[in-house]
Length: 237
Image: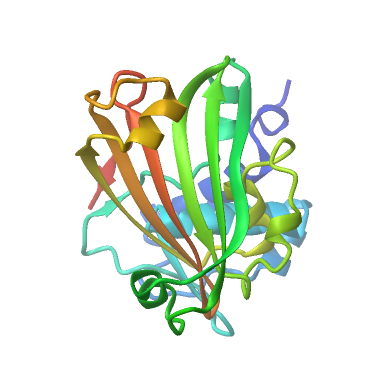
């Protein structure tokens, strides 16, 4: 079987771009071919090309500016390649079954702190969802997320039994920037109950903010039981 038949198309696009950068063909600041050019070159869909470029943005290899296209990032800094992945894909890759339990989904008003994060006025409308993600029925992630309606106006109508918030946002609010922090913390009483752990069990907590074009699209607090989960990544100069 040909190698291209077993490597996902978006990974082939990523590998091509990484090779051009690593071999010095494309220097920092150099323009990356447009989505339409890559689509024609690889004979794949525009959505597949967009996924490859989104993941390279998260990995710190390229930067994207609306109206200006994609360029090779300045690589003098150390960049983490902890990719923004859909937990459904992570669980599936381990050969297990992913499921979700929807706890809450509603429109809310932004507090002062949320308004500052989303660059909105206090009291502005946001969407709020709380889900528990399970692997073979065992809770592995508590997801508390606020979403900007300007980036994803149909968010409240999504059936999260069929898709995840991360997958939906990646498809409907294309990622142009992401930032995250990870810390060890004890869960709240509600988080512990949803994760089926004692409140004294340490957890890994990721706070992740995503931007789509001109909008701060999402702010998520992702809580993982420390005994059941670990983050994997690598760093490059």
